[in-house]
Amino acid sequence: MTLHFSKMHGIGNDFVVVDCRSAPLDLSAAEIRRVADRHRGVGFDQLLTIERADRADCVWRYDIYNQDGSHAGQCGNGARCVALWLQRAGVLPSGAVRLQSPSGVIDVEMRDDRSVRVDMGVPQFAPAKIPLRVDVEADSYTLEIAGQTMNFGAVSMGNPHAVIRVDDIETAPVATLGAALEHSAHFPQRCNVGFVEIVAYDHVRLRVWERGVGETLACGSGACAAVAVLRRQKLVDDKVRVSLPGGDLQLEWAGPGQSMYMSGTAEFVFEGEWLA
Image (cartoon, rainbow, N blue to C red; front, side, top):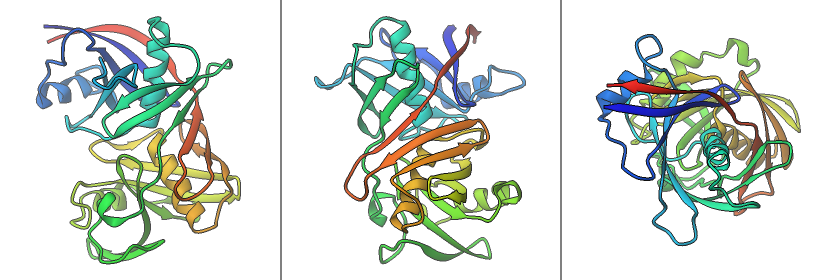
């Protein structure tokens, strides 16, 4: 089998994008892990499929697979890459359009500066929506995890996210605490873990440990989660620049009950074929 793909990235969060408009993806979880291998395969943080929508109000659909072959519910950087891929293919209408994602419908808009603005949906803080096994919803939670006391905020942006405030992201224990919290029994579907440093009311720095992947250069839904948690705690403004190791994203959120908007770039890297 020959798998044709585009290699893309959104501020360093990299993807293999597969055209599945004519036929579904024919890869098992084990085969996805082989393609994801950065030494013996192509290498990616997530694999994205472009598919025909089954909703009349959406122009196309996309699906998301992590490095370990598991499904992801949402990927902000991936959504921007999907929009750019569709534009290059000549099948993305002008203006704001709707795409069907694994976690629901999102609006995307290509801008004149080649950036993409994405409606990432309404942040969900209710524990059952995340999901998070706690008795009462709160702005932050203190739990015993892997023998440590952790304080974090939690929200769903299509994926479950935990957000931990740190004084300096350069020294944050991303690999150890990120892995511990991802696999905590408090998160029945595992979670992404963001470590966020507040620089100013309109600027934060962020590193993210992604569920099923590990630390990545950028995470769009993780950036949204960090802003949602911090704004709910009145620690940031409604417009925030989020600086990740791979680059910056611009976030806008008017507050509870409103959609989160993310703007950033997407890039093609190369076209290739995987010979299974």
